[in-house]
Image (cartoon, rainbow, N blue to C red):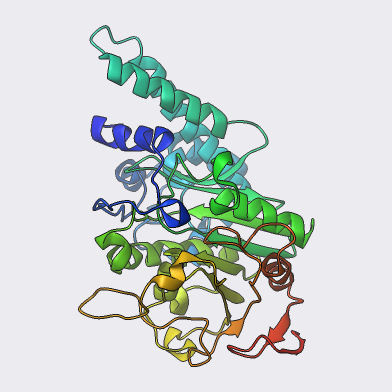
Length: 384
């Protein structure tokens, strides 16, 4: 891993970006991670099976699923051994295979940092950096963790599963907003403001038949600045989200409910027409770069939640010269089903136990949510 890339990941482990109700931070411009996963060049050059392997940049998840279904166990294990970083991030590959591949990729990344510690010319800063990364990778390699995607590039990207994804009757995906990456996606001190905190809370509320994925598969904005005010990072992240969700269904999972927090709702808005979701739930949204639900061009049911105490309410719902994200999804004109959120408390309280929003989220996740009239919160019955 290059020095610059490693520094960005390690910085995420030790630096808190102050945002939301705790204050405002100046944003720094981010370079989005796009394209196929690390190791793609070696994967493309591998013809040991007598045929070209599915190209991670162009193969559809259904094609990837069909390819893996035709492999023998020995062929499958050999591909995982030779190309863990590709297999672990290949949308459409079997779920258990991705877990195994990402464990190998994480172990390789950790061992690379351990080797660096033996370099006599290592600076004290690099020494500290290597130890931080070793600790992070060891945490992610704990047996109970189910890592469905891992990419160390940039600030690091990851997806972690809670529940039995292969057997779950209902699946949900949590898409986070700003300041989330490999180092911060599961920080215990951030509670229900992290994708892991949201995913764990939702899975507990929804019950054992549900699996929830905390997905950090795009480069998020850092702080409140131009990146958070424009759709540049959302445009880069949307194909990655659409591919990931399509990969889940291609691997046999049911269409998921996708929960999109803050800037993550901008990503979801740009991905909506391309991903097979049953429900699209936006919370604390600055807008989805759409004027109405119809503009999203999705067959998914669209829901929206915003508490009055959330600082996002102070963000103007405009889109002008590329700045801003458009209409407020909780307004009647937008046309989304309204999720009650009066006791959510701030920007990060929507998944807190005991809130109306979490109870409704759990009902959405299990397919038993009550309908709410757009913008009114009036019950209309039970979803079929």
